[in-house]
Length: 115
Image (cartoon, rainbow, N blue to C red; front, side, top):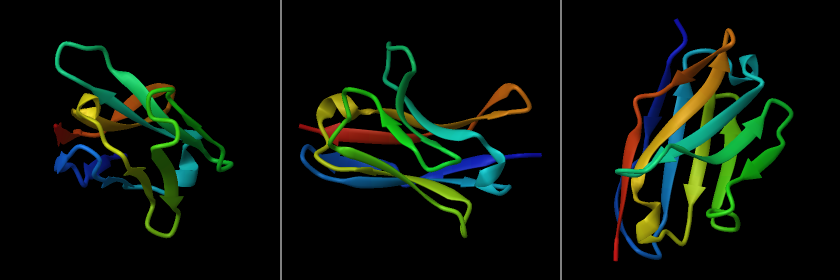
């Protein structure tokens, strides 16, 4: 059974940084892409960043220039470096992949940015 486990969330002041990690139970090259989503209270889930198996990256407009997605294939992890955090970045952050034509989600990690 494939599992995704997120870590690294927490409470940070505006302007600060956090680094999230998503550990997969299989080689991350098994996935065509790995994604980070976030969901704030009362809002829809939003795509934050994507990294493909070829290493290409893409970001949501609200995080471009502040967040960086990367991967460590030796550890089977995908990371999200978040700099210049804003209160509006407060959300539960989820790791996501497509697995056997169905979405697979981690349990999420809470990020709270205080003003």
